[in-house]
Image 1 (cartoon, rainbow, N blue to C red):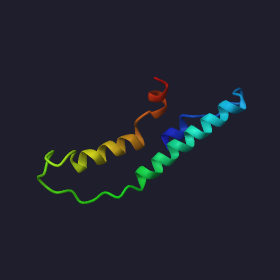
Image 2 (image 1 turned 90 degrees about the vertical axis):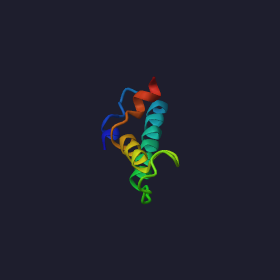
Image 3 (image 1 turned 90 degrees about the horizontal axis):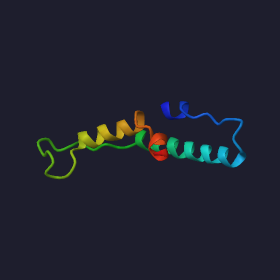
Amino acid sequence: MPVRESVAVRGDLDADHRDLLREAQQQLDELARRLDETWWPDGSPGVGWSQGIPLDCTHELAEYWRTEYDWRARKSA
C-alpha cells in the first residue's frame, strides 16, 4: 500500500513521536480497509446530480482517497 511505504519509523525519533507515527499509520490503514470494504449500491441511470453526487463520482473519489491522495502531506500543510 503506498501510504505504508511512505512512512518509516526512524530510530532517531523519541518514543512519543514513534507512537504518534504508528497511531497515524493505524488510522490510515483503517481508512484504507474501510474504503476497500465499501459496499456500492447500483446507481440509478440518468439521474445525474438531481439526487446529490452521482454514485460513479463518489466511487472515483473514494478510490482516489484510497490509492493516490497524500493524507500525510495534507495533514502537515
